[in-house]
Amino acid sequence: MGDRLIELRERLDLNQVDVSVATGIGRPYLSTIENDKKEGRLATIAALADFYNVSIDYLYRGTPVRPIKDGEDIAHGLEEVRLLKIWRALDEAQRQSLMDGLLNELIAKSNAA
Image (cartoon, rainbow, N blue to C red; front, side, top):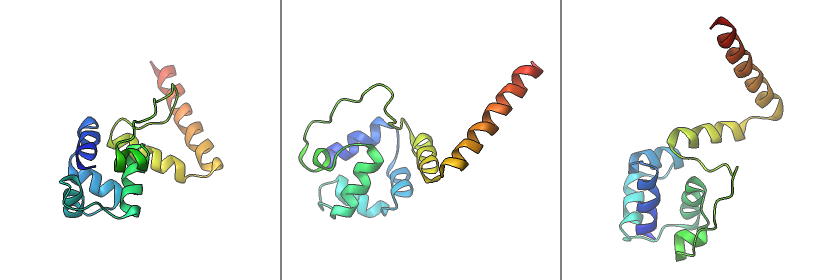
């Protein structure tokens, strides 16, 4: 499992501190899991699977990752992970308000140009 975790982390160009902050898993504990010194609790493995958008089965057993479909909301970096978490925490009215504000700002900028 450690090799898969390292590969996923490096694919996103993240370090252990980035993953620790984003998941709430202590960096030393994350290091022991990545180095296969501990297997990790189910809650920890689930948090890492959610963060990397893979199945628990993939992390634990190496079961092949299902192909990503066009339009799927996989994050491509820490900033996108953070934005997705914020977006998912908003209710529908908050999402609409945010989108309206962004669109109005873009329209204002294009009119000024």
